Image (cartoon, rainbow, N blue to C red; front, side, top):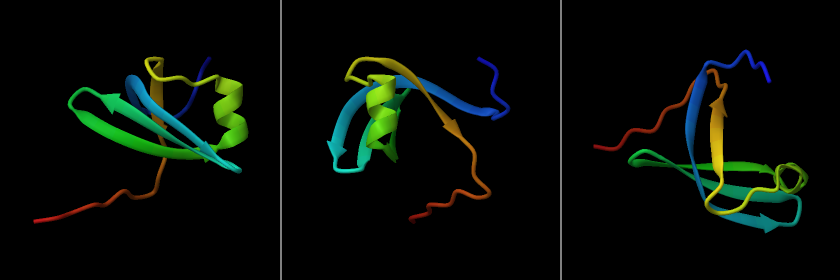
Length: 68
């Protein structure tokens, strides 16, 4: 599969919570943890389970989180 997105973070799925139309996917990327909200349909089509290898593909105009 070819994808134009360049921000790829391979990791391991740590949790899959499907609730109604949405799914919350936890992904461990090295020492970091990412949470993605995707459609429940997409999560089911990908057959995501804890322990699966998966890649977070990030395409955004801006991502900001700061706490000091």
